[in-house]
Image (cartoon, rainbow, N blue to C red; front, side, top):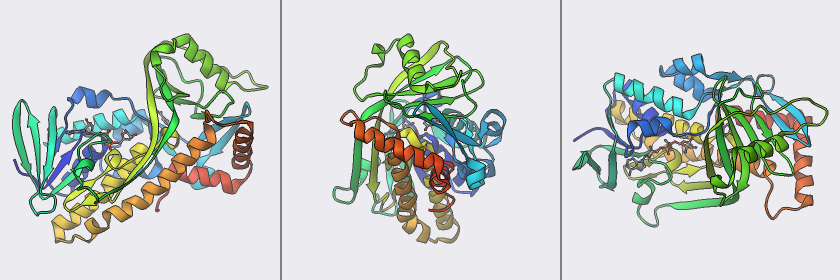
Length: 391
Ligand code: APR
Ligand code: PHB
């Protein structure tokens, strides 16, 4: 089998890359080890930056997002049991779309198949070869057969546990990592959201987040110790803890409860590998970097990476110009590190450290008050959250 760009992974990064390349007349094949249903059901975050929403629309895959997603003009920071709204358009002229990653994946798969794209599910890549030559290859197994995909370039969009990063020769890459001593217990519940905008809550009991999927489905998270087994959290315990962390003084706001349909713990880490390229192998999305979910940057970074990579591959395809490919890693890493900083900052601002003390909590509250009270600080949060146009 032969193509111009071999793409490993049908997450948002691999699918959007394949779609953008198709629009520019560049041929690709996507190999994905899971089946289609699995890829379309995986629960992930759901905040789309202003510029990323525009890029989805401009490429013709924003129609359902605009119909079924919600445009949000702000978030609420809740701390010291008081509510503080951050108004995005007033501060930045931008907003965000609330639309689940899993829905973006469904839209991209449907579009690639409608456009005749070659998307191979249950096709596991086992090796990437010849990345220092002009004819790299991806070996994969599909329907019990060993296959070879010959190509001009390989895009490893295969997530944190993929083979792309490991295919960089020893010594060629450097990694940076921070693992947090807590995770998020996330639930989906069949209940109308108790708020119109997302609530990021700081409390002495730990962080909590109220998000949403539709008018009848809520998505909520609780900070928990990293080794938490979700089976130890009954539905009642989860709702009680959420209610305690979201509690407001002097207000009759109440958290609505409903049947919990999904419960899982996500570990939290920050991770970057540099460079994001070796020879004809390019890394994009979670294959190259991980952020903790507090800033909602994972999906957005993945889509930014592949937008850059698509432009670079288009310049190579059309004009034989490889300068953008040469610049890809350095250009992508500037935004990656900006998002790494923002996600780390939001995480440390809002979570309770197991080894933290009352002094640390006072500092967090002082910082939160500063963000709520001073336009320059509020704007910094809003600029980063809605997505920086240029980094
Ligand atoms: N062969 C084929 N496919 C593979 C292989 C392999 N050896 N290894 C991994 N994959 C597939 C996975 O099954 C997965 O579907 O690669 C895909 C990677 O997708 P994601 O993990 O969704 O990564 P990415 O597209 O970079 O999207 C990043 O996902 O984890 C979230 O918060 C993150 O929102 C961000 C987004
Ligand atoms: C989500 O809706 O799942 C979500 C929203 C915001 C975040 C993280 C996750 O920061």
